[in-house]
Length: 419
Ligand SMILES: *Cc1c(COP(=O)(O)O)cnc(C)c1O
Image (cartoon, rainbow, N blue to C red; front, side):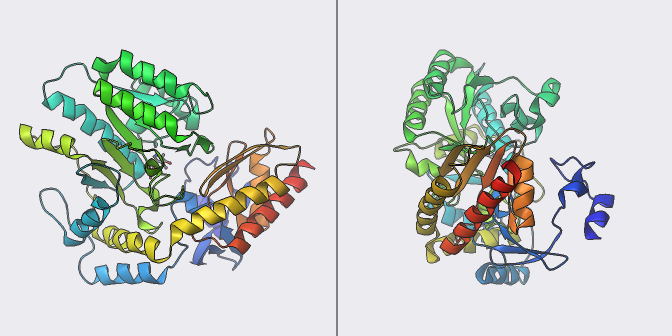
Protein backbone atom coordinates (compact mmCIF):
# COMPACT_ATOMS: atom_id res chain seq x y z
CA UNK A 1 0.00 0.00 0.00
CA UNK A 2 2.79 2.43 0.90
CA UNK A 3 4.70 1.39 -2.21
CA UNK A 4 1.70 2.33 -4.39
CA UNK A 5 1.25 5.65 -2.57
CA UNK A 6 4.98 6.23 -3.05
CA UNK A 7 4.87 5.47 -6.79
CA UNK A 8 1.89 7.79 -7.18
CA UNK A 9 3.73 10.89 -5.96
CA UNK A 10 7.48 10.36 -5.50
CA UNK A 11 9.85 10.34 -8.47
CA UNK A 12 12.97 8.36 -7.55
CA UNK A 13 16.38 9.23 -9.01
CA UNK A 14 18.23 6.66 -11.11
CA UNK A 15 15.04 4.56 -11.07
CA UNK A 16 12.88 3.54 -14.02
CA UNK A 17 9.51 4.44 -12.54
CA UNK A 18 7.67 2.20 -15.06
CA UNK A 19 9.27 -0.80 -13.35
CA UNK A 20 9.52 0.63 -9.81
CA UNK A 21 6.81 -1.52 -8.24
CA UNK A 22 8.04 -4.71 -10.01
CA UNK A 23 11.16 -4.66 -7.84
CA UNK A 24 9.23 -4.66 -4.53
CA UNK A 25 10.70 -1.40 -3.21
CA UNK A 26 11.28 -1.20 0.52
CA UNK A 27 9.42 1.74 2.06
CA UNK A 28 11.29 2.49 5.26
CA UNK A 29 9.43 3.66 8.32
CA UNK A 30 12.07 3.42 11.01
CA UNK A 31 15.39 1.78 11.84
CA UNK A 32 17.36 0.16 14.63
CA UNK A 33 21.14 -0.12 14.54
CA UNK A 34 22.19 -1.68 11.24
CA UNK A 35 18.63 -2.62 10.27
CA UNK A 36 15.96 -0.69 8.39
CA UNK A 37 12.33 -1.54 9.17
CA UNK A 38 9.65 -1.12 6.50
CA UNK A 39 6.00 -0.10 6.83
CA UNK A 40 5.04 -3.79 7.24
CA UNK A 41 7.52 -4.28 10.09
CA UNK A 42 9.95 -6.33 7.97
CA UNK A 43 13.66 -5.86 8.77
CA UNK A 44 16.52 -5.42 6.32
CA UNK A 45 20.22 -5.31 7.05
CA UNK A 46 21.40 -1.99 5.52
CA UNK A 47 24.31 -3.51 3.56
CA UNK A 48 24.66 -0.44 1.31
CA UNK A 49 24.76 2.00 4.24
CA UNK A 50 21.83 3.90 2.67
CA UNK A 51 23.95 4.55 -0.44
CA UNK A 52 27.31 4.82 1.37
CA UNK A 53 26.37 7.57 3.80
CA UNK A 54 25.66 5.66 7.01
CA UNK A 55 28.70 4.85 9.15
CA UNK A 56 27.71 3.78 12.68
CA UNK A 57 24.21 2.48 12.05
CA UNK A 58 20.90 4.23 12.49
CA UNK A 59 19.59 5.99 15.60
CA UNK A 60 22.97 6.27 17.28
CA UNK A 61 22.19 7.60 20.80
CA UNK A 62 25.15 10.03 20.85
CA UNK A 63 24.25 11.51 17.43
CA UNK A 64 20.56 11.75 18.36
CA UNK A 65 21.59 13.64 21.48
CA UNK A 66 23.93 16.00 19.59
CA UNK A 67 21.09 16.81 17.21
CA UNK A 68 18.59 17.44 20.03
CA UNK A 69 21.09 19.65 21.88
CA UNK A 70 21.71 21.74 18.78
CA UNK A 71 17.94 22.10 18.23
CA UNK A 72 17.82 23.92 21.55
CA UNK A 73 20.40 26.43 20.26
CA UNK A 74 19.75 27.12 16.58
CA UNK A 75 18.92 24.97 13.54
CA UNK A 76 20.45 27.13 10.84
CA UNK A 77 21.97 30.53 10.16
CA UNK A 78 23.71 31.66 6.98
CA UNK A 79 27.49 31.44 6.57
CA UNK A 80 27.53 34.16 3.92
CA UNK A 81 29.33 37.00 5.66
CA UNK A 82 28.64 35.64 9.17
CA UNK A 83 29.56 32.66 11.31
CA UNK A 84 27.98 29.97 13.45
CA UNK A 85 29.64 28.60 16.57
CA UNK A 86 29.14 24.88 15.96
CA UNK A 87 30.41 25.25 12.38
CA UNK A 88 33.59 26.85 13.74
CA UNK A 89 33.99 23.95 16.15
CA UNK A 90 33.47 21.42 13.34
CA UNK A 91 36.00 23.16 11.07
CA UNK A 92 38.54 23.25 13.92
CA UNK A 93 38.06 19.53 14.54
CA UNK A 94 38.34 18.69 10.83
CA UNK A 95 41.45 20.87 10.51
CA UNK A 96 43.25 18.46 12.82
CA UNK A 97 42.58 15.40 10.67
CA UNK A 98 42.27 16.30 6.96
CA UNK A 99 45.32 15.61 4.73
CA UNK A 100 45.42 19.22 3.50
CA UNK A 101 48.01 21.85 4.43
CA UNK A 102 46.64 24.88 6.33
CA UNK A 103 43.06 23.87 5.53
CA UNK A 104 40.03 26.16 5.08
CA UNK A 105 36.51 24.77 4.82
CA UNK A 106 33.71 25.75 2.45
CA UNK A 107 30.44 24.06 3.36
CA UNK A 108 27.61 22.85 1.14
CA UNK A 109 25.00 20.12 1.37
CA UNK A 110 25.81 17.50 -1.28
CA UNK A 111 28.93 15.85 -2.62
CA UNK A 112 28.23 17.16 -6.10
CA UNK A 113 28.19 20.73 -4.73
CA UNK A 114 31.53 20.13 -3.02
CA UNK A 115 32.93 19.06 -6.40
CA UNK A 116 31.44 22.13 -8.11
CA UNK A 117 33.07 24.36 -5.49
CA UNK A 118 36.44 22.68 -6.02
CA UNK A 119 36.16 23.22 -9.79
CA UNK A 120 35.22 26.86 -9.42
CA UNK A 121 37.84 27.53 -6.72
CA UNK A 122 40.55 26.14 -8.99
CA UNK A 123 39.27 28.21 -11.90
CA UNK A 124 39.03 31.46 -9.95
CA UNK A 125 42.39 30.79 -8.26
CA UNK A 126 44.20 31.12 -11.61
CA UNK A 127 41.96 33.89 -12.94
CA UNK A 128 42.46 36.18 -9.95
CA UNK A 129 46.23 35.90 -10.35
CA UNK A 130 45.96 37.00 -13.96
CA UNK A 131 47.08 33.58 -15.22
CA UNK A 132 45.46 33.00 -18.59
CA UNK A 133 44.54 29.72 -20.22
CA UNK A 134 44.38 27.47 -17.16
CA UNK A 135 40.72 26.69 -17.66
CA UNK A 136 40.66 22.91 -18.28
CA UNK A 137 40.47 19.88 -16.03
CA UNK A 138 41.83 16.38 -16.26
CA UNK A 139 39.70 13.50 -14.99
CA UNK A 140 39.85 9.72 -15.26
CA UNK A 141 37.93 7.12 -17.22
CA UNK A 142 35.04 5.58 -15.25
CA UNK A 143 35.17 8.54 -12.86
CA UNK A 144 32.06 9.64 -10.99
CA UNK A 145 31.90 12.99 -9.24
CA UNK A 146 28.17 13.70 -8.91
CA UNK A 147 25.21 14.64 -11.09
CA UNK A 148 25.18 18.42 -11.32
CA UNK A 149 26.34 19.61 -14.74
CA UNK A 150 29.88 20.55 -13.73
CA UNK A 151 30.43 17.34 -11.77
CA UNK A 152 28.82 15.39 -14.61
CA UNK A 153 31.31 16.93 -17.03
CA UNK A 154 34.14 15.45 -14.96
CA UNK A 155 32.40 12.07 -14.87
CA UNK A 156 33.20 9.36 -17.38
CA UNK A 157 31.48 9.71 -20.72
CA UNK A 158 29.65 6.41 -20.43
CA UNK A 159 28.63 6.44 -16.77
CA UNK A 160 25.23 7.25 -15.29
CA UNK A 161 23.65 8.67 -18.41
CA UNK A 162 26.35 11.30 -18.79
CA UNK A 163 26.52 10.86 -22.56
CA UNK A 164 22.85 11.83 -22.76
CA UNK A 165 23.81 15.28 -21.49
CA UNK A 166 26.86 15.68 -23.72
CA UNK A 167 25.66 18.94 -25.27
CA UNK A 168 25.58 20.47 -21.78
CA UNK A 169 28.88 19.08 -20.55
CA UNK A 170 32.15 21.03 -20.83
CA UNK A 171 35.03 19.07 -22.34
CA UNK A 172 37.69 17.65 -20.00
CA UNK A 173 40.97 15.89 -20.67
CA UNK A 174 40.43 12.19 -20.00
CA UNK A 175 42.98 9.72 -18.66
CA UNK A 176 42.06 6.00 -18.73
CA UNK A 177 40.19 4.34 -15.83
CA UNK A 178 41.85 2.34 -13.05
CA UNK A 179 41.25 -0.92 -14.92
CA UNK A 180 44.01 0.25 -17.33
CA UNK A 181 47.32 -0.45 -15.56
CA UNK A 182 48.99 2.48 -17.38
CA UNK A 183 46.34 5.04 -16.43
CA UNK A 184 48.55 7.02 -14.06
CA UNK A 185 51.51 7.02 -16.43
CA UNK A 186 49.24 8.39 -19.13
CA UNK A 187 47.70 10.93 -16.74
CA UNK A 188 51.13 12.18 -15.61
CA UNK A 189 52.20 12.66 -19.22
CA UNK A 190 48.99 14.56 -19.96
CA UNK A 191 49.58 16.82 -16.95
CA UNK A 192 53.12 17.49 -18.10
CA UNK A 193 52.11 18.19 -21.71
CA UNK A 194 49.17 20.44 -20.77
CA UNK A 195 50.58 22.28 -17.76
CA UNK A 196 49.64 25.73 -19.07
CA UNK A 197 46.06 24.72 -19.86
CA UNK A 198 45.06 22.77 -16.75
CA UNK A 199 43.38 24.41 -13.77
CA UNK A 200 43.31 21.11 -11.92
CA UNK A 201 43.26 17.32 -11.91
CA UNK A 202 40.34 15.56 -10.24
CA UNK A 203 40.75 12.04 -8.91
CA UNK A 204 39.10 9.55 -6.53
CA UNK A 205 41.95 8.28 -4.31
CA UNK A 206 42.33 4.46 -4.02
CA UNK A 207 38.80 3.55 -5.17
CA UNK A 208 36.52 4.66 -7.99
CA UNK A 209 33.30 3.97 -6.13
CA UNK A 210 30.49 4.37 -8.62
CA UNK A 211 32.61 2.65 -11.28
CA UNK A 212 31.85 -0.53 -9.32
CA UNK A 213 34.66 -0.20 -6.75
CA UNK A 214 37.58 -0.12 -9.20
CA UNK A 215 40.76 -0.02 -7.16
CA UNK A 216 44.29 1.30 -7.68
CA UNK A 217 47.40 1.11 -5.50
CA UNK A 218 48.96 4.17 -3.86
CA UNK A 219 51.94 4.52 -6.24
CA UNK A 220 49.88 6.00 -9.06
CA UNK A 221 48.46 8.69 -6.79
CA UNK A 222 51.92 9.55 -5.49
CA UNK A 223 53.18 9.90 -9.08
CA UNK A 224 50.16 11.97 -10.06
CA UNK A 225 50.66 14.32 -7.10
CA UNK A 226 54.32 14.77 -8.09
CA UNK A 227 53.38 15.48 -11.71
CA UNK A 228 50.84 18.06 -10.56
CA UNK A 229 53.36 19.75 -8.29
CA UNK A 230 56.00 19.84 -11.05
CA UNK A 231 53.51 21.38 -13.50
CA UNK A 232 51.91 23.60 -10.84
CA UNK A 233 48.48 22.09 -11.56
CA UNK A 234 46.04 21.94 -8.65
CA UNK A 235 45.33 18.44 -7.35
CA UNK A 236 41.70 17.81 -6.34
CA UNK A 237 40.90 14.65 -4.36
CA UNK A 238 37.26 13.60 -4.38
CA UNK A 239 36.81 11.66 -1.12
CA UNK A 240 33.03 11.99 -1.02
CA UNK A 241 32.76 8.18 -1.04
CA UNK A 242 36.10 7.19 0.52
CA UNK A 243 36.15 9.73 3.35
CA UNK A 244 35.32 9.11 7.01
CA UNK A 245 36.71 5.64 7.42
CA UNK A 246 35.23 3.65 4.58
CA UNK A 247 38.64 2.44 3.31
CA UNK A 248 40.07 1.66 6.76
CA UNK A 249 41.82 5.00 7.26
CA UNK A 250 39.91 8.18 8.05
CA UNK A 251 40.73 9.40 4.51
CA UNK A 252 41.95 7.26 1.60
CA UNK A 253 44.57 9.93 0.85
CA UNK A 254 46.40 8.83 4.02
CA UNK A 255 47.26 5.58 2.23
CA UNK A 256 49.18 7.55 -0.45
CA UNK A 257 52.49 8.57 1.19
CA UNK A 258 53.21 12.31 1.24
CA UNK A 259 50.23 13.18 -0.98
CA UNK A 260 48.55 16.43 0.06
CA UNK A 261 45.83 17.54 -2.37
CA UNK A 262 45.25 21.27 -2.87
CA UNK A 263 41.50 20.70 -2.71
CA UNK A 264 39.60 17.88 -1.01
CA UNK A 265 35.88 17.13 -1.43
CA UNK A 266 34.01 15.46 1.43
CA UNK A 267 30.37 14.48 1.88
CA UNK A 268 28.41 11.25 2.31
CA UNK A 269 29.68 9.84 5.66
CA UNK A 270 30.52 13.22 7.20
CA UNK A 271 27.36 13.25 9.36
CA UNK A 272 27.28 9.48 9.79
CA UNK A 273 24.40 9.40 7.33
CA UNK A 274 22.14 11.70 9.36
CA UNK A 275 21.91 14.99 7.50
CA UNK A 276 23.04 16.49 4.20
CA UNK A 277 26.43 18.12 4.61
CA UNK A 278 29.43 18.41 2.31
CA UNK A 279 32.61 20.40 2.43
CA UNK A 280 35.37 21.49 0.08
CA UNK A 281 38.69 21.80 1.86
CA UNK A 282 41.14 24.26 0.31
CA UNK A 283 44.78 24.58 1.29
CA UNK A 284 46.31 27.78 2.62
CA UNK A 285 47.88 28.70 -0.70
CA UNK A 286 44.48 28.83 -2.42
CA UNK A 287 42.86 30.69 0.45
CA UNK A 288 45.68 33.23 0.61
CA UNK A 289 45.55 33.90 -3.13
CA UNK A 290 41.91 35.00 -2.75
CA UNK A 291 42.74 37.04 0.36
CA UNK A 292 45.76 38.72 -1.28
CA UNK A 293 43.64 39.66 -4.28
CA UNK A 294 40.84 40.92 -2.03
CA UNK A 295 38.41 38.68 -3.89
CA UNK A 296 35.38 36.80 -2.65
CA UNK A 297 34.86 33.26 -3.90
CA UNK A 298 31.93 33.66 -6.28
CA UNK A 299 29.80 30.86 -4.86
CA UNK A 300 27.59 30.10 -1.84
CA UNK A 301 24.69 27.80 -0.92
CA UNK A 302 21.68 28.81 1.19
CA UNK A 303 22.00 25.84 3.53
CA UNK A 304 25.79 25.55 3.40
CA UNK A 305 27.12 24.83 6.91
CA UNK A 306 23.74 23.96 8.41
CA UNK A 307 24.13 24.01 12.19
CA UNK A 308 22.16 20.82 12.87
CA UNK A 309 24.28 18.93 10.35
CA UNK A 310 27.48 20.48 11.76
CA UNK A 311 26.60 19.46 15.32
CA UNK A 312 26.03 15.86 14.24
CA UNK A 313 29.22 15.86 12.12
CA UNK A 314 31.26 17.17 15.07
CA UNK A 315 29.96 14.48 17.44
CA UNK A 316 30.35 11.86 14.70
CA UNK A 317 34.03 12.65 14.20
CA UNK A 318 34.74 11.99 17.89
CA UNK A 319 32.53 8.93 17.91
CA UNK A 320 34.53 7.27 15.12
CA UNK A 321 37.44 7.28 17.59
CA UNK A 322 35.42 6.34 20.66
CA UNK A 323 33.97 3.33 18.83
CA UNK A 324 37.34 2.40 17.29
CA UNK A 325 35.48 2.20 13.98
CA UNK A 326 38.58 2.13 11.74
CA UNK A 327 39.95 -1.01 13.40
CA UNK A 328 36.60 -2.69 12.81
CA UNK A 329 36.67 -1.68 9.13
CA UNK A 330 40.06 -3.36 8.70
CA UNK A 331 39.00 -6.54 10.51
CA UNK A 332 35.60 -6.85 8.83
CA UNK A 333 37.13 -6.10 5.41
CA UNK A 334 39.51 -9.04 5.77
CA UNK A 335 36.66 -11.24 6.96
CA UNK A 336 34.41 -10.17 4.05
CA UNK A 337 37.18 -10.76 1.50
CA UNK A 338 37.85 -14.23 2.92
CA UNK A 339 34.19 -15.27 2.99
CA UNK A 340 33.57 -14.00 -0.55
CA UNK A 341 36.58 -15.96 -1.82
CA UNK A 342 35.28 -19.07 -0.13
CA UNK A 343 31.54 -18.91 -0.82
CA UNK A 344 30.90 -16.53 -3.72
CA UNK A 345 33.90 -16.40 -6.10
CA UNK A 346 33.80 -20.15 -6.94
CA UNK A 347 30.38 -19.77 -8.58
CA UNK A 348 30.84 -19.76 -12.40
CA UNK A 349 28.51 -16.75 -12.72
CA UNK A 350 30.73 -14.60 -10.51
CA UNK A 351 33.60 -12.58 -11.96
CA UNK A 352 36.01 -10.25 -10.22
CA UNK A 353 35.63 -9.29 -6.56
CA UNK A 354 37.17 -5.93 -5.60
CA UNK A 355 37.44 -4.70 -2.03
CA UNK A 356 39.14 -1.86 -0.18
CA UNK A 357 38.09 -1.47 3.43
CA UNK A 358 34.31 -1.75 3.41
CA UNK A 359 33.87 -0.66 -0.19
CA UNK A 360 33.25 -3.88 -2.09
CA UNK A 361 32.06 -4.78 -5.60
CA UNK A 362 31.23 -8.28 -6.85
CA UNK A 363 30.85 -8.70 -10.63
CA UNK A 364 28.08 -11.11 -11.62
CA UNK A 365 27.05 -12.47 -15.03
CA UNK A 366 25.78 -9.87 -17.55
CA UNK A 367 22.16 -8.91 -16.98
CA UNK A 368 21.85 -10.51 -13.52
CA UNK A 369 22.93 -7.77 -11.09
CA UNK A 370 19.43 -6.52 -10.47
CA UNK A 371 17.86 -9.95 -9.98
CA UNK A 372 20.60 -11.05 -7.56
CA UNK A 373 20.06 -7.93 -5.44
CA UNK A 374 16.25 -8.29 -5.54
CA UNK A 375 16.66 -11.85 -4.21
CA UNK A 376 18.96 -10.62 -1.42
CA UNK A 377 16.47 -7.91 -0.46
CA UNK A 378 13.68 -10.50 -0.33
CA UNK A 379 15.91 -12.44 2.09
CA UNK A 380 16.36 -9.39 4.31
CA UNK A 381 19.69 -7.96 3.18
CA UNK A 382 19.46 -4.64 1.38
CA UNK A 383 21.82 -4.64 -1.62
CA UNK A 384 21.80 -2.46 -4.72
CA UNK A 385 23.72 -3.15 -7.92
CA UNK A 386 25.58 -0.78 -10.19
CA UNK A 387 25.05 -2.46 -13.54
CA UNK A 388 26.19 -6.04 -13.00
CA UNK A 389 28.32 -5.29 -9.98
CA UNK A 390 26.73 -6.10 -6.63
CA UNK A 391 27.84 -3.34 -4.28
CA UNK A 392 28.46 -4.21 -0.62
CA UNK A 393 29.09 -1.18 1.59
CA UNK A 394 28.09 -2.08 5.14
CA UNK A 395 28.27 0.39 8.05
CA UNK A 396 31.74 0.76 9.63
CA UNK A 397 30.45 -0.88 12.81
CA UNK A 398 29.09 -3.99 11.06
CA UNK A 399 29.60 -7.12 13.19
CA UNK A 400 31.28 -10.40 12.24
CA UNK A 401 27.92 -12.20 12.43
CA UNK A 402 26.33 -9.62 10.11
CA UNK A 403 29.15 -10.01 7.57
CA UNK A 404 28.44 -13.77 7.60
CA UNK A 405 24.75 -13.06 7.04
CA UNK A 406 25.49 -10.78 4.06
CA UNK A 407 27.72 -13.36 2.37
CA UNK A 408 25.32 -16.21 3.12
CA UNK A 409 22.36 -14.31 1.64
CA UNK A 410 24.39 -13.16 -1.38
CA UNK A 411 25.65 -16.70 -2.08
CA UNK A 412 22.08 -18.05 -1.91
CA UNK A 413 20.79 -15.22 -4.12
CA UNK A 414 23.45 -15.98 -6.72
CA UNK A 415 22.61 -19.71 -6.66
CA UNK A 416 18.88 -18.93 -6.94
CA UNK A 417 19.29 -16.54 -9.87
CA UNK A 418 22.26 -18.04 -11.75
CA UNK A 419 21.73 -21.72 -10.99
C1 LIG B 1 28.38 10.15 -4.25
C2 LIG B 1 29.57 10.80 -4.84
C3 LIG B 1 29.53 12.16 -5.24
C4 LIG B 1 28.25 12.96 -5.22
O1 LIG B 1 27.75 13.16 -3.94
P1 LIG B 1 26.20 13.54 -3.75
O2 LIG B 1 26.08 13.83 -2.30
O3 LIG B 1 25.42 12.32 -4.18
O4 LIG B 1 25.93 14.71 -4.62
C5 LIG B 1 30.69 12.73 -5.70
N1 LIG B 1 31.85 12.04 -5.76
C6 LIG B 1 31.92 10.74 -5.39
C7 LIG B 1 33.24 10.04 -5.47
C8 LIG B 1 30.79 10.08 -4.93
O5 LIG B 1 30.85 8.78 -4.60
